[in-house]
Image (cartoon, rainbow, N blue to C red; front, side, top):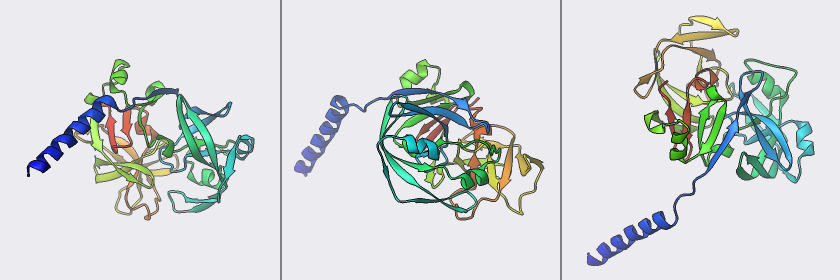
Length: 288
């Protein structure tokens, strides 16, 4: 018994020493945001000595998507087997994929990044606001999953940072935000929202211009926007905060994505500061 007691004491002391002498490394990077013609946030990444403008798509599990032309110019890439993937309707696609040795997002350096070639059919079939004359390159969720990121799209900024004190000095007091735990699904972090239709599980998707639900014969349509049927919920509650009325677009989302009911899109995300703690699977949303 006494021996176990001493082992426990040494274990606690060891943990304290690790905490004080090997503190968790802080990181901070800020990226300026622009918007594509379909209202998706974009930023610049750097590969070698070249910069590329990409949409930020947290609903995508593909780390990076570039055009065929840009892929042909990339330095030091290794070809992989073709990637098979699906859209939210369940349609299947195939594209060439490669591995990049290094990529920069601001001052954050990422190694061995998987990149796939743009699939025009996928882009065409998943665009609500389409632009057939433009290819949309994107950075997906995986490059961010080791980090904590702050989305302030109202002020055109994205921060990659775990330094809460530094963020607070910039005006972001995360302790005053609404905290909600999430689950990780195939389309990203999923949070629970209370609506007039009851509780719904929505996947955070900056690659979607709209907030949507899986269409159902049980949902009474209240109108139509962008050629799509909508249901207007008067209540949109996350945690104990009701963010008010919101149009929910009704989409034919495949039943294979049974862990979620829809997507939390840019029509909501752009109006609120959101701090995403990927490692802990927790999201903080400003009350305003």
